[in-house]
Length: 328
Image (cartoon, rainbow, N blue to C red; front, side, top):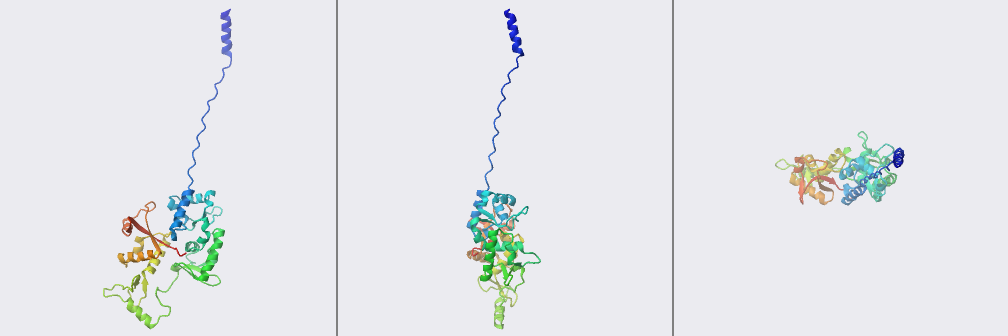
């Protein structure tokens, strides 16, 4: 009897449905920490460029991207975030699918709109962007186009003040009138430097005597910073004028980044001995017209000739020349 009940109990237990084990809970996947925002570093570089002053600020979008080691598209994307817009601005507005050109768009701190509007830097960048090979002179009304509204208004007012005060950068000229025209001096046909407006017999004879070559057939000098032409009667041309012209031409050919190698400038002025070149360049640096910078080696591997053309100072090999515009 007992055996029968036990067997029945076993059968009943065997036929009962087995309870399922509770499913194992999977650990929630760990969320990847978002990458650090590039904005603080970007603003730090922008602040450091402002401290350098002159032609270093405001930098172009292309130059800023180079300084932080990013592509211009990535830098532009970072600048369009809410975090960045509170502090920094692009000089040109991007409409629709149109993206601002990295080489003609400046990056500035929001509080510097008025100062940048009055700067030589913005005028040169806007003129370079607006000019065309077959129409190098640009009307005043065309120059503010494409800028942010606040910057555009301030820039137009600054241009009108420049015309009234006859105050322009060394590289730019203007024709005043109902519709003023701005142009780069290198696009104009101008008299030779030093040519008097109304030459007289006395001044012509004096210039001829001063510019006459010496016994060795070399050009003579009227004093520090002045290099006389080698032809009889030719006007004296200063080192500063020749250096300005060479820098402007080379800088324009390289996209107006305001960085030209000493090697290229020495090659553009081959008749000037190295010692004279270095002495005269030092004078321009003391006048705060130019500055020298070393190469960080990240974006351009210097050739041996470029290194040889550099100037060693305080353990740094200075190979790049930048034009300062502290008087803007």
